[in-house]
Length: 264
Image 1 (cartoon, one colour):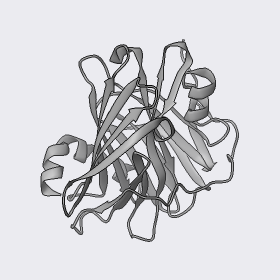
Image 2: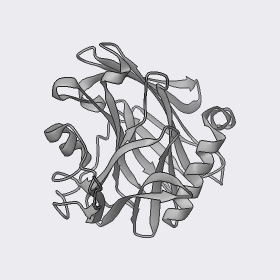
Image 3: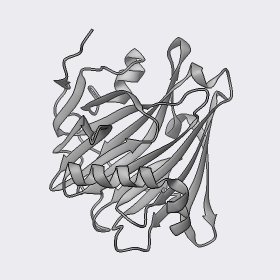
């Protein structure tokens, strides 16, 4: 059955808020080609700043895990967190989030790409109860472009044959790409039709919610983990247009994490 993409319900969303100020890490690449700074806390990526240090463009990027019997777990709230730098003086980070109920463990490595304005997050999912195939893992991104949680537009789109999650506002755009194919995706208004609420209330994403315009918006995408593929690379690119942001994100994906980490 075909699905007709629609604008999500609940515009413009609840009043926007920023995340915790209790940071566990800050980082940037020492390169003029990558005017990007990032912070972490509670086991997830928080604000990413672009193209200046006074211009926050995201609230946070975290993961939601769903499973049999209505299982729902958000790593920032429902897991114990550990963080360490790659080595002393290097602001790249290893994050490990272990579910409080013992169901799973998520391991991440985070750096900024020195060659372009892209944040790279290598993500591994390890099932500790049952098998990896029992779970679905979703990336949940809250765009707050140019210091504003309201007035953003988000959508699911394609660029050069690749599916990406997009947002734009106040002359800046972002694009989130994955090395594993995106499964179900959604764009919605925070507090009403965002992916967090859809997954908590219904256990699945609404495939018709492909656009959320001019509000407090969120993007959600299922990462294509499988029994044989338990590590994915997420690339969050920024630019003056959606196309530029997507070009940067896809170029960083093609390059891969290890070359970026070595240069970083």
